[in-house]
Image (cartoon, rainbow, N blue to C red; front, side):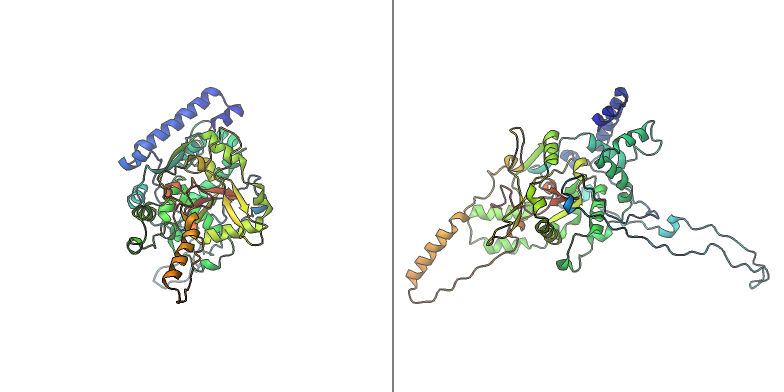
Length: 454
């Protein structure tokens, strides 16, 4: 951000002052956290309830910066109809129905606050969410803090409000030439005033969803803004199917205890309790994150738009991904993107799949997700031997029972690799950008080096 100001002709000494202000703000915010939040070194702030204004947001902030333009759609404007309110009493100077003359009286029009005053319900604080799903140093991701991260915190806390300090408007004018900054400055005030309560309501008829709801994306964006673009807190807030709370862990573990090795039992318990991967703790260099933002996706994403759109809609309605505006990745230290590709698109006997490419790099200094993901504490991948073991079992079974009919059965589990959930703090680290949206992956992705073992 500060380099952009220098390039725009801003005096160097004033830019230094801004940098000092940003640093001071981060230190002040970090110092006010609870002991647990301080240990995590994550910036979290609670926002008091805000009275909703008259011009409630009606569209989803979807910005497409010339990437995957075939998948971007223009949000639909949803007009708000205001009730007609009478602003005067009937005038009748001869009326004395209560013993006193009724003089013509004008009443000032009600304000937007009077008409639409609605205090949103109290939202859980960051500490309350961490108490439910504690932070784990073994499963954590952040990128190196930079100017855009500071700008979001300053903008949200009114450091760039009108006449906040001399030159604030000029800074915003310069930064608005960048599409990401302009999108944030345009949409942030609306998102801060959005009521999030409907996010916790059950999603009726989700199985018949044909496309991702723009209204839901807006609600999720407002939730992310409330929790300072910490997508791990958003996942904790949503909970339910996003964290697989419906699973009954004790009966599952009891059912498999006598059927698997102790090692596999421990891995199953870990996946049910903490999710995947077993270990991942990385502070990504700022330049490495920027490289993957610039690279975008593989050409097959644009070549097979119908397949991609159908797959994303299915994953979102099944609560395997959480969609947000794409520009949030630029301003959040808790998110990054991984290139996506389509596999088996032209295969006659194999299903086309949207694949998360955590391996490909284009230069020696680039670090991909599969390079940085540890595997030493993951379960051993043994299903490559299953077919041979199955044949041996059938052979021995026939020897033992030569005259009895042997019946074989199998089960095909839909989206089997998505059943293990990714730990909340890592959902945005395993996320990806396609078209106008960023998808935080709260369920295991197809292409991660630890997907098979999970």
